[in-house]
Image (cartoon, rainbow, N blue to C red; front, side):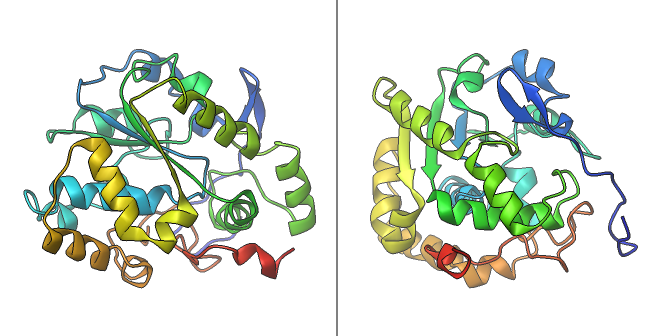
Length: 270
């Protein structure tokens, strides 16, 4: 793989079956530590299928909890360190280690794990927020993400990638199984708030109000306005604490980490 000097050289990982779900070793090598992880009573899990708006929701929640009380964290560390991905293990600290060493409370932890994996873990009874994206938008975004990300399998061409997506033969498996199984879990688990990315785009303030009601938060009107302003797509795209500009296994010249931030982008491809 030929990359610029700032990009580390990695071999694209191979998919393999992990308890019935296609995964790569970057998301399974740390499985024992996930199983033995010390969850805290006020941990909040932010869950989604990949490329469904998780980063945006991470940032909104980080601002809701810490934008006023710890404003320095917005410039002191990137979002992926403030809201670590539980299952990832990359050429730096694994997600469990980042979360374990976090001093602030509550801990915000992101994950793309299927429902059957997470409810077997120490997080199985924690507060969770799930955001679901349109499958057609997710596959387009996932394709571009895989093109620039060295810890994802090589995507190949668009038509073959789309076929594998429809067959559930990509990392984290079937989009339909993921969003549907989490929706079913919502019906029996009261500590799970289920959101739709489309709704968050079309009425951000209303969706934040519902999220705050679920979490027991009461931000002022001024604070909500400030959060909505800071979480605008164009501002996030140029925010170096969010746009992954310093993540060395991502080639942002191939595709930006924050690419479109819209809905129905799939119409260009399908």
